[in-house]
Length: 294
Image (cartoon, rainbow, N blue to C red; front, side, top):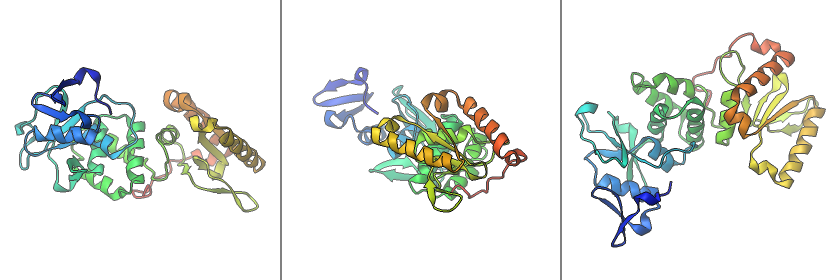
């Protein structure tokens, strides 16, 4: 997240971020440094949270406004009675945070990855919330921590969205587009796909490791991003596709337009294919074990 030109008020080698908040020009492009400067001039018990915390952690996120989110979490006070900065350059929140929801990163007070993800439920739609959650699990955060923070905040806004997303998370996802593709083919009436799991030939032996696979229907789904345009990668993809077809696998390849703009088309095509190749999988909703995503 870069500092926009309209904020570049420079004086004596320092850049003004907001009223009474300055930072050395050499540090202005570093988000953690900007957050430190903001917190130094904010109310007591302030920390970084929400979108800004997610950016510091490196969550998989869509493009979002370049704003710093500051959380005030005064102990033993209700939200409305807490002091918070009113400077328009920052997005402010007043949360009642448990001690286990707070930590530091690069010396910056910040909400934990699990709490940060939960707070994103008020900002992100379901597919992006799932993608962000997948990246949290990939970073090594146990899924139990996400369940715990959702339980502590079950009466807070957007609790249902967070809970639904939590049931769809998978630590084996390798990218935001893969997560979006999985959400497109998830939900009531559809079986759960395996994520980046090896599949094997009928006679034995490794065959491939698709982004998503449904062995009962011999159906595989692949996201084709720009990296697949590399000539060597393209040739490998072609050879793998030939091998999978020889073993009666059907492979659907989707790009950014289908995954991000037309997910309903992906879902309809996949559902119709399952109905044709393995209709018994559509007869009921497969329950997702509470801790299966870990």
